[in-house]
Length: 182
Image (cartoon, rainbow, N blue to C red; front, top):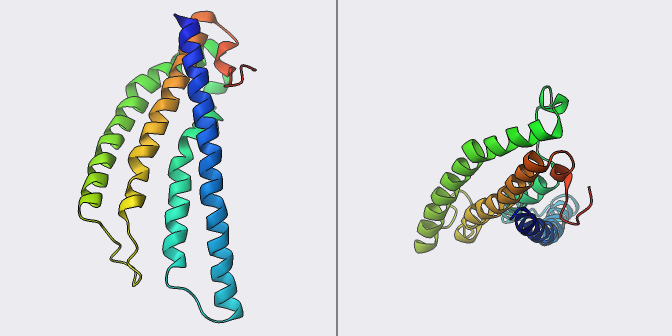
């Protein structure tokens, strides 16, 4: 059963890795273009745009949210290592597994449900921003919340499987990456 679950974790890791790279390119490139365009218009021609700020925060917010699962895969989230770093891989994995089950999954399920409800409401009223004279559409941006929660839940499942494998097998399984190398 464990080898099958580890293959599932490997598949999830591949999906999240590819998704993270795609999200990066689809948000960073337009973000840079919009910022450069705005800076040139503002400082070279004294003609700032009405829409650049809105596009910037939407793209950056999307990058931040949609990149969270990719960051989890590559262990890029901040962690306090005062005690954790001194523990054996097996104890680290046990603590990770318990925290995934007690905090991570319940919190993200609530985030997913609330995000889904907000997104459905936003799409039903075709929500736009009241804070900008441009009044950009917010409903597509709201969809980022449940999608991000879903991707994080998926990657959390992979991390839980790898933690369980380390607890059951001992050292080595915890650092397995999607490509099978430690």
